[in-house]
Image (tube, rainbow, N blue to C red; front, side, top):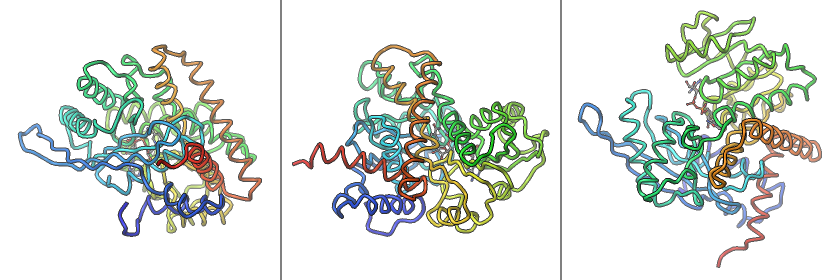
Length: 418
Ligand code: NAD
């Protein structure tokens, strides 16, 4: 790791770990070991563009921890991706996998470019080249990528094909979040959203708010935000505002999520949706709603925006949307924050189910997947809320401490080699 003081999500992730290390009374050496990624790779990703010119992007894969099993984590395509962001996201994956007790460590990858400015053919070339570059350090028993911001099932299919061609045989277990026809799992595409929506309802009830008739605002209308909004709307929650990178729409009577989904499929953005009024995206975080669901990017609830939050609960669909300073402000204001490593863990849980199915060469029913997902999310919710109450902690502090303890205990059992 670099010796400069990190900013942004890595600063937040390290501060959260430091609190857990203090609570668990870990030695300075153990704390440092858990703060340090096991392996980092930075690669150049040259692209021949459709017009014949050449662009070169930076790609990263960080494997934070392998103590409990293969590293697991998404692949992000976004302009702001850098090594520190990927380090933070990889560390959060380690804690998330440990918290949900799936037998993985944590990893994350990214390529710094804007996928919206590239054709499908260019996206395929970027994905295949990036996969070739990181191929020596990934594998179904080593490190298994999955979709994240800017990537999807098609990206996973290209990674699977590139890896399989290099190996000389088909390796479905190299990625999760694949299309169903290539060995993807039923229930995976909605798994993160389903977990977010489920935990949001548990959180509302814990505050004495019945989800049916409650209100919610969702930031981000991608794989996570769109599904969460849809499931909540089906449960009777009025989703009164939704934003994406281009703008935001609101309707005090509740937006039709199905109609908004069709509109976005056609127009590429929520902007101009006729079923609501345009609002400034910054207004969404400050709306008077029961549940606020940031489901876009990290660092949106800050020392400046947190004081404006009027929601009873914040459910982190995104990874790292709340900075350390904002966490304190929200706690002081009595806002219940359900942390990312609990709230959005449904994706990695069903990724684990997909990986198990690939190893079994046997597909489970959607019912099996949903039941087992719900069971794990509910257990994690009960474990975290119970621990938080017992130790007088926030849900984030409790979740991080429980996860760090599990990784530490696994490390102690394995010992330090040599
Ligand atoms: P996505 O690329 O499918 O969608 C991202 C959405 O956020 C888009 O609607 C985009 O327009 C919007 N957005 C981007 N920047 C924004 C901004 N500044 N303000 C408002 N909206 C903005 O990505 P996704 O897979 O839905 O991931 C969203 C978040 O959820 C990320 O933090 C990701 O790490 C996290 N997450 C994703 C998964 C998964 O399975 N996909 C699992 C766990 C966590």
